[in-house]
Structures are given as C-alpha cells and as structure tokens.
Image (cartoon, rainbow, N blue to C red; front, top):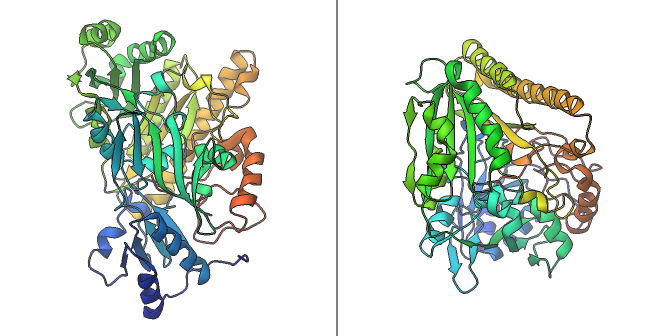
Length: 495
C-alpha cells in the first residue's frame, strides 16, 4: 500500500455508514451517539480529546477492518485499551479511536498454566481470573492499568523479584499489522517481531490477544501501606529500602511514595510493602519499619490478587495528571530524597490544587530481570537501577505547562544525581547504558534514551512491518517520516 499522509478531516455520515457495514462485531460511536461522552474519558482529564469516531472493536478481524478503513481514507487513528496513558497517545482530535475496551476476556489454561488475555483487559481482570486457579502473573501495581500498555512497554510488578518483567513471561501475541494482516507472533513465528513487541510493541501493530506464562500462587501474601512523617522518619525508611534491595531473595519489595495525605502533618513517606510468604517472616524482615511506629499501618495477610489494588486510591480516574520517569541507583542518599520532598512542597506552594501529586520510588529485587540480556528483547533498560515516577496531579488547564515543567525538571534532577553517583563509583561501564522506563514517560523522551543500543535494530524491523509509519503515536522509529501534528512522541496507549 502506498504511503499516505494521514490527516483528521471531517468524516461524513456516508463514511461512518461504510465503516459500520465493514465491521461484524463492533460498535461505532460518533459525537451524537449515546455513550460517546463516556467513550472519550481517560485516566487523566488532561488528555481527553474529541474524536470524530470511536470504534469499540470486538474481534481481531474488526481491528483489521478499522485499520484498512483509516488507511483507505487517510484518517488518523489511535488505539485505546485501559486508557491509562497520560501522554495523550490514546486520544485524538477529530480522527478515529480503535478502542479495545470491550475485548476483556481472560481464559486460563490449567494444563499448561498459561493465560490468554484479550487486548482490552485491565490487570484486575487477569488477577481475579488467575486467582481462581491458584495462579498469578507479573502485572501492574495499579490494577486498572491496561494489560496491553504495560506489557508492550516492559512491565514491572510485585512478582518481578521472582519472575522478571511482564514481557519475560509473554509467550505469544495475536497482532494486527499495518497492512491489516492478523499474525501470530512468538519465538517460533515472526521472531523478529516478537523481539520488537517486547518493549516497543505499540509501534508495530494492535495486539488483540496475549498469551502469558502464569505461576502457582496459592499462599497468601503480607502486604499493605505504612505512613510515616518525612521530617521524622525519612532516614529510617530510605536506609531500610536500600538494605532491602541488597538482602531480598525476590519475595520482599517496597515502593516509597512522597506524598501529602490529609491525615499526616507535613510531607509523608508512604511505604507500600509486599512479602510473598508468611506473616511471621514478613514482620521479621520489615521490623525496622514496624518499630518506627508508622502513623498508619494497613499491612495484613491477604490473597495475592488484592495486591495490585492497594494503591488504586492514590491514582483514581479524574483530574489532570501525568507521569514522568527517571532512575536512581541504590544505595539512595537520604539527603537527595529529602531534597525531593522540598521540591514537592514547592510545587504545592506555587501551583494551585497540586497536593495530590506524588513522587514514587521503586525498591524492587532486580536479580531475576537482570538474568535476561538487555538485547534479548527490545526493552533495553535492564540493570542494577530503580525507577522513579514523578506524578503531578492538578485541576485546571491553566496549570498544564507548570506541571509539565516541574516533572521535566525533577527528572533532570535525578539525572544529575545519577551522574554524581556514577562519578563517585568510579564511572562503571554498567551505568553507561542506563536509560528511562518508557511506560513512565508522558513527555516524549528520546527513543534512543528508551531503547538504547536496541534502537537501530528496531528501526530496521519497523521498515519491514510498518514502512508507512501507520502506528505513529509511539516513539519515532522511522525518523525520515514526520509525525502528524496531533501526535505526541510516546506509547500508543493500550495501557
């Protein structure tokens, strides 16, 4: 098919009718349709846009038909799944949304302990379906996140200490490509595309179905949140986090969030704790934190499938928000963390209605995910470093630029600290390849930062499978083709 410059022109009733007739098991909405308003809602109000057509697809065949329709009439489109991305890549002004939100079926195969997941599912769907059979997977730490977006960008979770990234348990995909073909993608079929899909899949097609390896998880876990005053307990919390990363066998992990909950006077550190084992072992491991007498402690024994909902209350739908990633290396200096606390306070003071903003630092066991080489999949950012996510929350469009600037500045501050630590450690070669986690990037980092040494190979595979850059809402892998004005350089959602 010849290259066409896609645009967002007015789509008339005849075209809408043609699209409807080409689909077998889908619903087409236009701005005057019942349910349209709900269809354009996104996790972040800041990226809600008025599409001309929303297609709730029901099958891979209808995804194919929608893609071919868009190409025939040069209509720009985006793909949406969980709609959790804050980059705007799952929204569009005037064009078409291919929405997988009705494709949420999860099928568990107990003979092989595998799980087939449709492309519109969220992690809550998967966690609950797998739990019925005593199984679990490496899924998102917020369970209303889409399976597709998290997986195609790599995927960290509470079980990463045991099983690595989400893509490390990915066995197979059913993908709809730019030419409308429906392909099985695995280590045995289209292996080059399988390599690319594990880390950059949003740039190559629409994933209608995933097949994952699942793992036995019959025992309950010990988990919950502990809230501490940052002024009194910061050193205790950060020193514990540093030690946990070094000592953990993969079954004990934490996330530390700088926040301002209403029941804590001043800034707080919220420790989301996880131990995959008995309570007595957990309380021994987490004794330094428990002895520090948290202001509030919700830890308890619970089934694993509840774990990915523990943080939902902090990041609900509604309001304007975004995420921006960075990296830290343990041991993290408590003084640096204290400076981040001051920066968050400054945001509260200078930008209205930002007190729900957060800074999240991961302290996960990295041994398992580092067993996979950085060039074994498109996901390049494996190593002995931890992710940071800066998450400003605000209410008014007038504050958009200020919050984006704050997030960029904070990410830059982490880079400066990383360089300081690198020099202090004698400039080890292992730190040269540290990049950024693409799923936390709503502000368009360079694709070379995201994909590192894998970038060049990705551009070659892109030329083979999507030479016309049909899937153009992700990081640019076809530099010679310019992106349409509405596109933002980030992941196409499905997240």
